[in-house]
Amino acid sequence: MIIVLKPTADKTQIDHIVEKIEKLGLKPWVSEGVERTIIGVIGEEDVVRTLPFEGIPGVEKVLTILKPYKLASLDYKNTPSEVNIGKGVVIGGKRAVVMAGPCSVENRQMLLDVAQRIKKSGALILRGGAFKPRTSPYSFQGLGEDGLKYLAEARDKTGLLIVTELMDIRQLDTVMEYADIIQIGARNMQNFDLLKEVGRTKKPVLLKRGIACTIKEFLMSAEYILSGGNFNVILCERGIRTFETFTRFTLDINAVPALKSLTHLPVIVDPSHGTGRWGMVNAISRAAIAAGADGLMIEVHPNPEDAFSDGDQSLLPDKFVRLMKDTAKVAKAVGRTM
Ligand code: PEP
Ligand code: MN
Image (cartoon, rainbow, N blue to C red; front, side, top):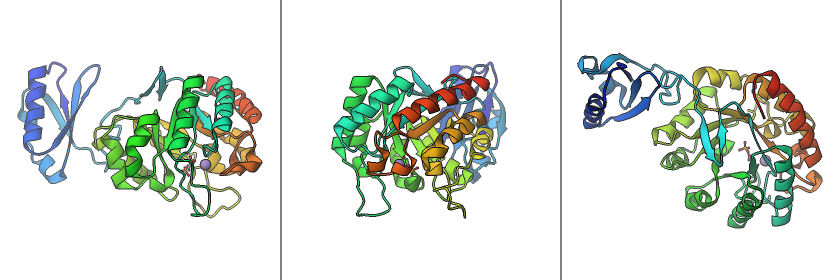
């Protein structure tokens, strides 16, 4: 439910309403707009509906949010959210932000080399997995905390920010210490306990779409994080499983405008996992920006043939330079910078 306040509502009236909501064991979410303040009330639908808020001073009207996701919806906030990562980097603003780097952090030197190359090409954020979700238990599982240390060193040397995956609640504090953005991978999109934990922090979270999850389920997972108090959520479309086997996944380009019509959260696209083929990554990056994506996540490797993971979809640094140039033209055509 949303309580829309009168433009004249003052702080005493707002505090009074907040207090009333809390007394009923419900959670108020105050959103201060330019013209007026609104208060979202989250809790048992039946309890919420019985509240007599319309008679309280300062209240203009009370609306019910019919969607199952509340805080993520445009009903709660109808202007695009910008997620501030630090060092002036914002996701969801005019500039389409590119995150790039190897699938896995394999060793210190290769990470530092890739970081320098992608920085020169205009990427703002370095990606790299230190804890890797692998289909086979016999595949490389990541370097763990050593990998995080290399990422932090690369950040110090280049000024890039870093995004890396958190797979397990037990690693939360460690990953929090190093990462600028915590990535929740496709396989953990519905790990609700993990979502609740990152929801208790204020760290930006990159939530990747599950491989068999609908847009509604995707937004419900985002809602878990928001309802914990963390509004710094970035959604990432990374392809879903369909009957098609030519590509590794089917990148759901529809998801970009669909999400934009439902949520205020920024949306980025990962054409590397979405295609599984490096030769398609440039075209799909351009398509994503044309469709309105707020950024891209791209896998780049100095020697994809020998990559520990996802070599087939990783771009050589030179090919990444090309991608940045080609995609910047599309960004310009749709009124964005890159
Ligand atoms: C990744 O980004 O390396 C990754 C494992 O992504 P996803 O969770 O989308 O498969
Ligand atoms: Mn990967």
